Amino acid sequence: MKKLFIIRHAKSSWLTATVNDFDRPLNERGHNDAPFMAKKLLQQINIIDAFVSSPAKRAFTTAFYFANAFDVKESEIIQAGELYHASSNVFYNTIAQLSSAWQTVAIFSHNPGITDFVNSLTNTQIDNMPTCGIFAIAAKTNDWKNFEDAEKEFLFFDYPKAY
Image (cartoon, rainbow, N blue to C red; front, top):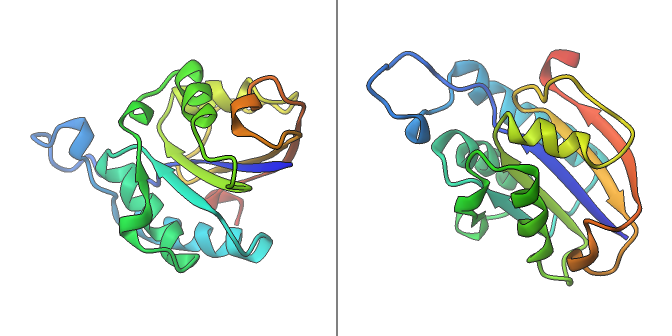
């Protein structure tokens, strides 16, 4: 059994029009929501084996807050360039390459692809993956290579505005 936590980046800043999309930072709410949601996740699970993130600044910063809550160093966050505005197929391909030794993985990415991806996983459907939202599932497989075809079970969906 594998557990996957799919996390959209926290709220980003739109204050500087000259900053390109990839380099957009988190805004104040994002800097508050990410550590808050990381602590909420830590209350439910105490170990995440790998943190895999889009290298875009807002996604990677969100991943950093989560990794920090789990006492994982920033240098241990895996940057996967393909997760920047990824389609569902890209998510599946990225997951298929994860180490089978990892039982729990957190993936950080962007909309609209992240919403499409979570809606492809189980019968639980959401209209829009909110910023810093966490969609958690379990997959009945021993190897991430088999994730796409594995039977999946919805575990929970959480997001900052639920509190």
